[in-house]
Figure 1: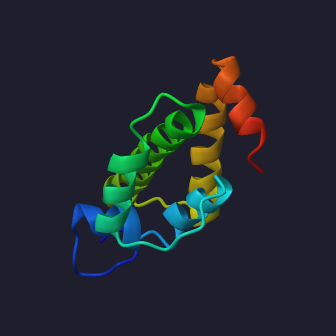
Figure 2: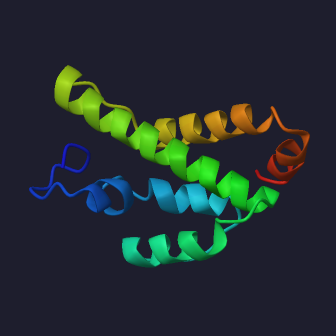
Length: 115
């Protein structure tokens, strides 16, 4: 894996295990407190992220932003030999979610409650 330098590079390792708790910290930012395996996270997402309520929409935006920025980081490390800290990646994810969410008053209210 280009993020944690382990030998195994599977997509679920890249997204959940190999990026030094970024996803866990993103969930904490949303007020979600749980430690789950990738399969448990997928199950939870299938059950709880379907709705049109603001919490489900923010979760989906966050998941998409996290996958995108972590994949971008992977590509930067492989193809440009550049790397950012986990904190920098987390800030980019949070910033993107806030920017996208600010376009909807309902989502903006939900995001105001997040630290």
